[in-house]
Image (cartoon, rainbow, N blue to C red; front, side):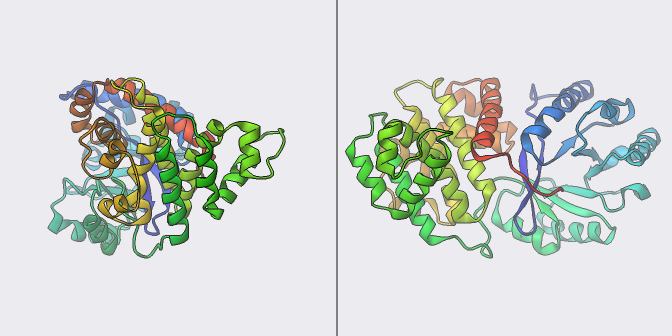
Length: 398
């Protein structure tokens, strides 16, 4: 589920992409995969909490499959070329008349679009559209009364090109925040201090009295942690201070809450709740997969790796500069730049899954020694865990 961002960089929905069961798919296999995906839409829509953009095939449009989906917060993505078939075109008209919403994928080269689709979203793939033609195609889509959404936006230059040309939405890999959204530098310092604290105990040893002093050295971190712990006591005695919380809950429990707090602070520093959600989701996914890895990596180190993987995008600082401001053990220092060690390879798998780089998933999973199916199921579980810990995302509609 790739976040769809509007021109103000707010997440307004998620584009659903499905990992293919094999590298070569014929028409029947594509229909089967799409049918399985549609069968999961109700559950995924509840999980996402926002509009889903879901790819479908002409077969599913014609045979009534879509009418059996319970969730109404869905936009069905259909190849524009499918409308050249008269039966598919009539089915789309009928479904739109019944309240269904469609988006189209691919620049329209043939007959005019049905009037019912005026104002719909038109998806352009930045990887499939020649770079020199992307801006002109966006402008033509706008002139036709459609809303351009550019997918596979994996670099800042493409994002700028798409938005400057008038694209309403973009989606792709995580990118450094736009210059118009200033990072809170005071919170940035607190985030880095929290990460250093987590790094100091990432080997799994129990936190000792140095943990108390590390937290106490940053008044903002201590106050934020106390508020978080007070909200999490659920009827227990409310801690009066962080030290009191450690007495009530134990240092290990308090340290575990620092992971959640750091994810929240990452989002606060960037003024972007989606980055907080992404950071925590990645942390929980890395924790869950850690048991499948060889070696002695502690789940704490894996969780911290997940947080580190979004840091440069939240504070707008290159990884090498972030690295200079942190004091991390070698295995975690490596994830910021080189990703040559097991934690780095774990994050390469996470990236491939999070950004729908399906061509890379099998190779990266094989290198790490985990099954793609395991990563997929744990990713959904991590999404649910992060959503519950942070609160379900709420937002607008694409």
